[in-house]
Structures are given as structure tokens and as C-alpha cells.
Amino acid sequence: MWENKSDDGGYHDKDNTYVWTPGSGSIWEWIGLVNSEGVSGFAGHSDWRIANVKELQSIIDYGRVVPSVHPGFNTACSAGCTVVTCSCTAASYYWSSTTYASSPTSAWGVNFSNGLVDFNLGYVSPNDKTGTRAVRAVRGGL
Image (cartoon, rainbow, N blue to C red; front, side, top):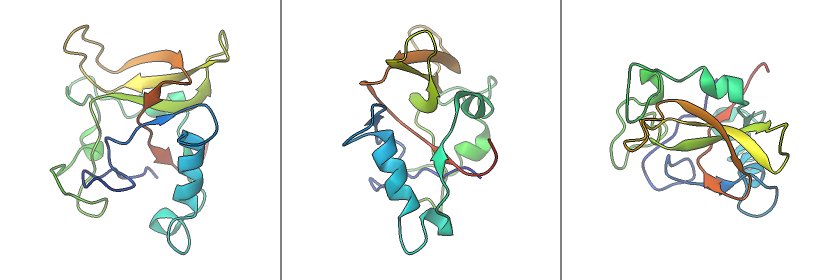
């Protein structure tokens, strides 16, 4: 099960970005808040986690651009829509939970943009963990 992203300026807004490195303003702080949201966590679940790089790759749709994601992850997205009324994906880079083995100060992520400059449609790459990127929660098997 994937987290729906909104375009309402709220907690699940597609344009919110975070650093990977643990601490204030990190994806780890954010996922903790997702799991404690409301009475029993976001959408009634408290076992949300950050998607790994393979999971993020699984939602790429190379036949789409801006964003290059399966339509189920970008449906009815318009200004003001909520997680109940839409599912949004920013045409940008999303963190995964996967550290880049060759450089532990970097983590893998997926760019759901078409790049417009370098045409990095669905591009998977490591980035420095201190950079800010979007993030999407998932729950269920690893």
C-alpha cells in the first residue's frame, strides 16, 4: 500500500522535501510523524516506512512524462486536492531508504521528472543525504 500525496500544502503535499540524514527535517522524522498521525497512524496504519529503491523503481512509467509515474500515482491532482480526493507525484527526485554502498553519505532515489534538460525520465541515482528531496511512504512486504 502506497501513501497518497496531495496538493493542498499539508503534511502529505507532493512538494514537501526533506533531508535523508537522520534528525530534524529528515525523512526519518517525517515517517515517525506519519506513523503517529491521528489516533492510529496515517489512513489507520502505523507501519509505514520509506520505500526502498526497487519499490520506487516499480512505479516508474516510461511512457509518461512530468511525472514519469504510473497513472495511479498521479490521478486528479490539482491545486487544493487532498489525499482523499487525489494522488499526486511531483515531477522531481524522491528519496529511497537505500544507502548507496559505494558512498555511505549518499542514498539512492528516483527522479520522476522527464528532466527537460537532460531527459532523465525515471532516472535512478545516488545523491548526497544532506540534499532535500521528496519522499513517499509505503507499507507492507519488503
